[in-house]
Length: 178
Image (cartoon, rainbow, N blue to C red; front, side, top):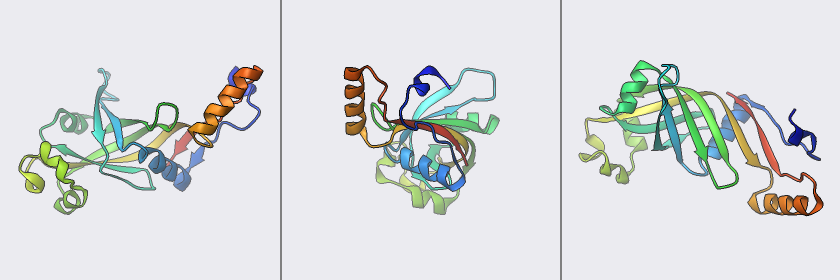
């Protein structure tokens, strides 16, 4: 336990497992629906990082994205399926890091389910663009940093703590094992 945690008057660490972990991942990911999608995790090369919009996330910790078959990301996943997703829901809370395994599919029914008309920006032939693929990321583990009672209460606690010279932090963090 680090020194800041020893000064906490209330619980600020909670690891979650199974369905609870998946539910928390979904909850935090949906606060923004955009993440940094990192590839080349196990290659020994520099991470490749790019912003991606989530098309769907479920309570088991599975994420779906649409991507071009000829993208660097798809090529990197074919060499190394281990990926990391990094989320930030607001300036002060809703942080999430997810480690998982990615697979690529061309399932037309799934593409249709995930399709959003704005995607025509990248897939100019629309929903039938032959370059569209689905990337499915199955989370294995993660870590989250959040606050327990919302940003307003967290700010009030920090302000009162600063005035009193005490650590009154509304944060909560922990491991997520799916």
